[in-house]
Length: 177
Image 1 (spheres, one colour):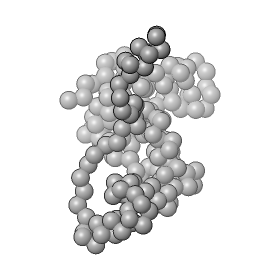
Image 2 (cartoon, rainbow, N blue to C red):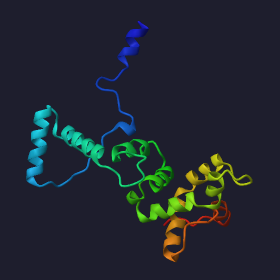
Image 3 (cartoon, rainbow, N blue to C red):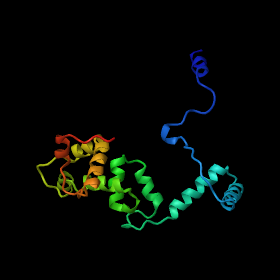
């Protein structure tokens, strides 16, 4: 009898998807010829139009070669890693492997992190500074403020290299407007 009550409480239909699995909607404009091509692709593959668009995008991302260091073979391979990263991790990864894909502000913020006094000490294994885990936590917790500092650096025409993130934090991060 308990089993009958347990199954009776389940809601009918499909289970809810996790937020990262939900599909996002956006509109695009296409020339009529491309739209017809997508419709034909959908028919040929026995897919919906949305599924055909998704397939075509995945195929395009897989074939698009990056002009960077060769670490990632395609934009799809880079995307697979970036998807699991936080915004600061994405920015630094893009700086290292595909800087042409960064916005200017994100590039300056990534350089501020990578080429900070602490970032360079960690990279070169120099003792006496902040530990890598602490540094990562500092960056994660203050990403919006780091973007604000990057904007200030851009406005002032300064270099993002050689700043101390711990020093910037102790003076008070500028707030993003």
